Length: 241
Image 1 (cartoon, rainbow, N blue to C red):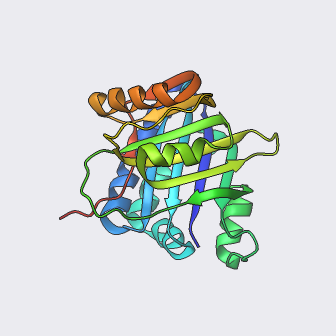
Image 2 (tube, rainbow, N blue to C red):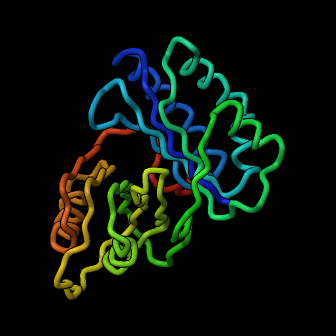
């Protein structure tokens, strides 16, 4: 039962936000080392303010979500980074593709009573899939205000290990994807380009960002693009080999 947590957090100050990201970096090192079924674990500043943070976490199942939270090393960082003086969440979404399947009592208690999430169903897509080819490319994108066919079109242009679309209560369609490869084959361009209101690109490699921007600007009509090159955590889990 995979699910994705999307959290927007307001820190009390810029310095507090920086300290939170430092703690989250330590937490992510532990999670990457010991919990390969936490597929994505990314934390960064929001575009509009260095006091606002955005978290994206993808879990293969409830058990790995519970196990990583019980880790004593993880707990030390959690206590340092988060307390009533550091800030509070302004949005907590739990995105699921199996809304009719009940969560365990413990998982539900954490999500409902501690995180206070709003549950959102997946409209289309997948939380995780593997590709045979090796790739060092890793991008996380978050699109807001998407046309209905954005997901289908995107998946013809790039290889995604995660690609989900969903709507919040205001009807705004969003897409979250983890991209590992970009096709070198030219695709036919539709007469009318699909619309994306805003897109956030999270990636530390400038050449990868440039290549991806060229692709999406050719095939989509985008109002604004925000780029995050600095973040804590990891976009796609890769084993320590």
